[in-house]
Every structure is written in C-alpha cells, then in structure tokens.
Amino acid sequence: MPSLKLEAVNWEKFPIRDRETGATVPLRTNACQQKILRALSKLGDEGKPMWVSVLKARRIGSSTLGEALLTAHCIAFPNAKAMTVAHRAKNARELFGHAKTFHRVLQEDLSQEFPATQHELTFPHLAGASTHTISTAKTIEGARGLTISALLASEAAFYEQADTVFTALISTVRYQPNTLVMIESTANGKAGD
Image (cartoon, rainbow, N blue to C red):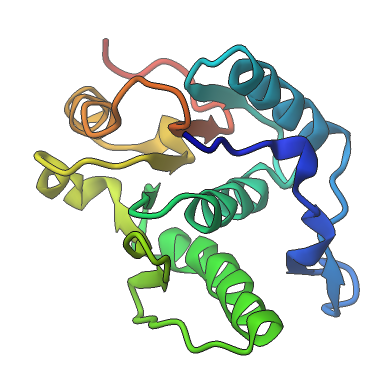
C-alpha cells in the first residue's frame, strides 16, 4: 500500500496569499508548521495513523498547512475522502479557498480538468477519484456513516456541542495507517466535559 511521505512533498508548490502584500507566494513552511510536519512524519514512518492535535497561537499557518495536507492526501491516494470542518460557515469557506487554489494550480500543472463545486473538489485517479469536502461543526451530524480518510477540524475549541460533534467526526476516520486527522485550535478555555 502506498504511503504519504511528507518529507517528499514540495510544499512550495502550494500557493498562498502573503498577509502583508496580498501577493501569491509559495508555501514556505515556518517553524510551527515544520514541527507539525515532523510529528506527522514520525507517526507515518512508524506505520501509525497520522493524527495530531495542535494547540496554536493565532496566525501560525496551521489551518493553511492542514488544507495543504488534505490536498496532498487526495493527490497521493485514490478513493480518499478528505473533509475540512470549521466552527462557522465563513471560516469553512475561507479555508476551502486555500484548497481550491491548490486544486486549480494542480490542474494547471497537469493540464487537466478536475471537477469542482463550491463544496467539493475532485482529484481523478485510475483506481477511483478522491474528494475533498467542507462542512461546519453545526452540520456535522450528517457525517455519521461516512468513511473519511483525512480530516481537518479547525478551531475545534469553538465547536458548539463539541462532545457530540467529535463523536460523530472521529468515528468517521478509521484508525489505521495512511489516515490523517489534524485537530487544531486557539485556546478557548474549558467548556463542557
């Protein structure tokens, strides 16, 4: 079975918007992103699922990295099902904007047309297409019964009814090698159990 070797990914192929200038620049991983990648790589190298929880400061690029990871996952594996979940629709759309940019650039690089909608990106493979979708924590109950292979749960500390949301979310991802889960959030204090 193939695996996703994160150290082999050329992250600079993923274009992002520079906060200062607004210009499109390559994703050059910063120290915080590199720490996340090292933790995920270690798990992958050990043959374990690549699952991490990231308590982050604001604006370190973990959400952007998460979108790049889900894109790399969909490129690496046929029949992959990736999902981005955010606490609000506005945030989900903004994060998915990164994935759409990555998807568009990939199409240009390969001179191929990849299907896309407002909520789903498709990555063709001979053995079966991979997809990347978005959702909000409020609507995630509908995810029960799905099988997801890569998940980005963004700003997870701000999910309403977090106990039922995480039960629904985490149970959709099999705990096996080559699955990817990144739960990331700025701190929000204790709320609930």
